[in-house]
Amino acid sequence: MEGKKKILFLFDVDGTLTPSREKITQNVREMLESIRKKVYIGFVGGSDIEKQKEQMGEDCLGFFDFGFPENGVSFYEGEVLVEQERFINVIGEERYKEMVNFSLEYLSKIDIPVKRGTFIEYRNSMVNISPIGRSCSRDERKSFKEYDVKYRIRERMVEELKRRFDKYGIHFSIGGEISIDVFPKGWDKTYCIRHVHGRGIREIYFFGDMTHQGGNDYEIFKDERVKGVCVAGPDDTVEKVYEKIKEIN
Ligand SMILES: [Mg+2]
Image 1 (cartoon, rainbow, N blue to C red):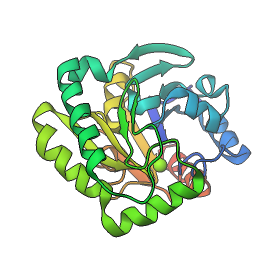
Image 2 (cartoon, rainbow, N blue to C red):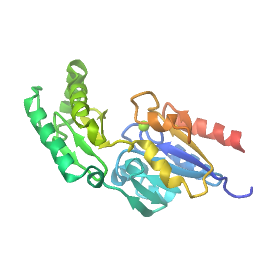
Image 3 (tube, rainbow, N blue to C red):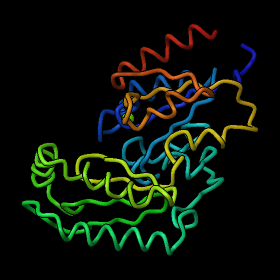
Image 4 (spheres, protein in one colour):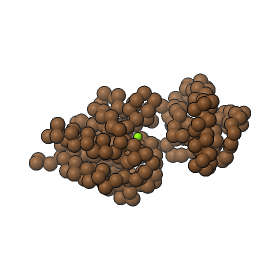
């Protein structure tokens, strides 16, 4: 073997390397360890690095050549943080404030069975808006999800937000079970690709479970700089990775 190939195997985290909202299995870790001798490996997920560590282990950064938490808005090479962009630097205080004020007013006018707390959560790379509030219990979360399917609470709010704030280059989408994700346009998973350039990588394979339109892997899956592979869960990922490794050998 003449060392590593200039190929990156890039993985979505939730539903691809780990079961949904659960921890990584030994089986997947062994697969990553074995292919790392042949190709470069990286992960890309919407959550911040703390949440990624909860799912993939405290040592996960050292386990990959490239780490892209927050879709690559934070960029790690091994354990070293190389770059980190901020939501507020891109959107600006004035526009952000206008969007928050509008959202709070909108939320105050909708009638849903239960409201709790933390309706707007400000993060480094995104803002999260939740009509029920993020501090709701698990049962309340479940009831809201059902209510939302029926009455399209989030869908209607997203439509309204888009209508008003599209001109500011802000992206809104339904995220998870109770919230709306807000980030600058282009900060989907394709954002991370820019960091790989100039590092000698000639080919990128991306593995993800939400590759359908509206899914959070859709944009990168379709990107022409990437060869997309759709997986049905961690076991399927392992299988498809070994298939690809055989093909490129
Ligand atoms: Mg996923």
